[in-house]
Image 1 (tube, rainbow, N blue to C red):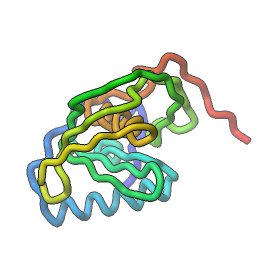
Image 2: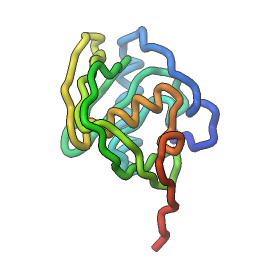
Image 3: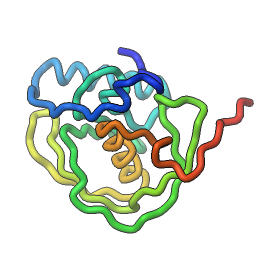
Image 4: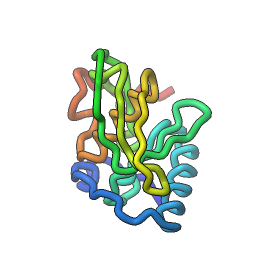
Length: 150
């Protein structure tokens, strides 16, 4: 499993709903976790590893989250925050996101769940759901800049 980089076309395509909640899905998630940690990421969508699946993982601090077939149900209080992306290295941008969201999704067993999120987790969720819809942060950014190399 490898990261896919912009301008790869899969990053601009809306992903397909996950239908099979099986051992293969568990293996995909395990590999995605390893890849995300290795690359110092806080979120990773399936299409960033060349998989056409509506699935992403997030790890804002010490806990891993798995979101399958996610959908934002409620969003409140906009703010502008800085963000980057593993698929677009060395670029950052200012993006308008919501401070608080409520999301409906399925867990690794296929059970429907809801979650209220705020702060960094809410920001990551919105970024990754955009990925699953073929939207990149550079498509929404108010300002984009290059990361300075030390």
